Amino acid sequence: MHPALIAALLAMSCLPAYAAGELRSTLQDQQGVAVTIYNEDLALVKDRRTVRLVSGQGALAFRDVAARMRPETALLRSLSHPGRLVVVEQNFDFDLLTPQKLLEKFVGGTVAVIRTNPATGEETREEAQVLAASQGVVLQVGGRIETGLPGRIVYPHVPANLRDRPTLVMQLDNGGEAQQQVELSYLTGGLSWRADYVAELNAADDRLDLSGWVTLTNTSGTTYRDARLQLVAGDVHRVREELHPVRALAGMDVLTAEAPRMAEEALLEYHLYTLDRPTTIADNQTKQVALLAAAGVPVRKELLLRGAEHDYQSSVGELGRKMKVGVFIEFDNRETARLGLPLPGGIIRVYKQDGVGRAQFVGEDRIDHAPRNETVRLKLGESFDVTASRKQTDFRKLPPPAKGTVMYESAFEIVLKNARQEAVTVTVQEPIPADWKMLQESHPHTRAAGNVAEWKIRVPPDGQTTLGYRVQVKY
Image 1: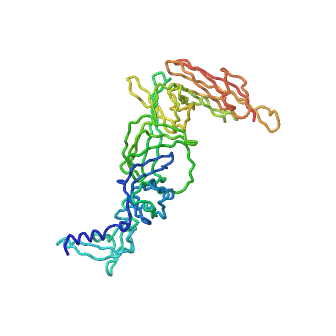
Image 2: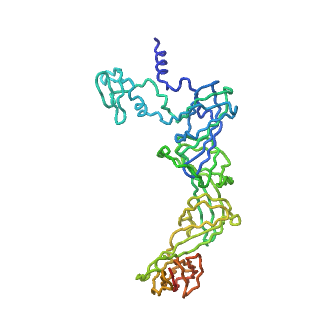
Image 3: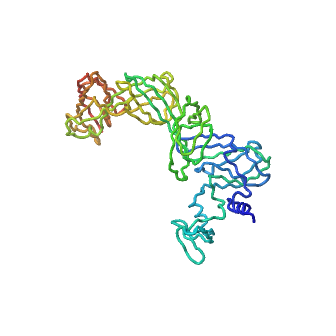
């Protein structure tokens, strides 16, 4: 027999078993793909392709689907002949072809072992049965048992359920034409997004420039070329069940894509953001697209000192307990404040220019989803130059006014110090439990809430101010 013919027959014998009698669709058939990504590792994929089918019953291997597809959510429909293409059965083959997987699939089967004589280069071939492949290989060669790989292993074919790409194999009943446009939709894990924001404060700390980015991460096992991208912000209820494990990022690429502000619309009780152009989301890639940009947003800064309610029930012996003064900023998400767009939850990182114009990081905080007309409040850290100390100056237990009640009277002194060259205003909030009444105070308070007394205390430059108050608490 001619050597070329022998080689051709050998190649045919090693073809995957699924190649016979099975039509295959690859990314070359793809006419379009749409991806809608939700907050919690979930995405809806709609993959539109032109395929050629046999009349009646036949198999279609839909290659290059997501490796983390949830096959129970897959739905194939014909766009050319609606109602004339029926899916009878489907199998999701996500076991990918590797040397180890191929060996495991042949446990109990027969392979050929080819050895090469190191002295002469001559090759010998023996039939062997694979007995085990979980922790090394165990082979039965003739009447002996061998471990390890004694030579090259040659396999007669690739098993039908072992694929080089994640593949959904569907048994179809086609009552339409041979060439059709179909759409496969399914839910998958491995696609997620988050919102990241960058804010820069001006010198007076009364305005900021805000930029919002959407950060996409794709570990789903496939690439979505020129996809129509949509993002859903909100907490979508899902039935919790075990999914396939997340694969590690192998050589993650980070890409930044310039884009205008994403279009936004209401969707049930959620918000839908749509990118105005197609974008490619490669496998094992993190990608950023612009969400919003706003300049000159009015902002309010607050220095806040908050106490503890347990001090009102007992005598405290500490002398001048040091307390941190928190630094907060807040802004209104309104059109009048140059915003007015529903903000997806994420992290806002705040910067401010130093004396020579270099932007320096000054703090970050995480926000929840912020609808229009909501106030966004961020904690940036604790003040360095504004400090506080607090001590209890008096405590007494009073005769109970009624059976089953107790009543205490406490006095406190809070000293606020300012090392800056300009005056500051510190908001002091004291959570006071139960039924309380202010008896004396050096500065007037307001009830910020039912159990919170609040003072606005001005502290002079390079000086200090003392807040003193006496309160009665009844339990």
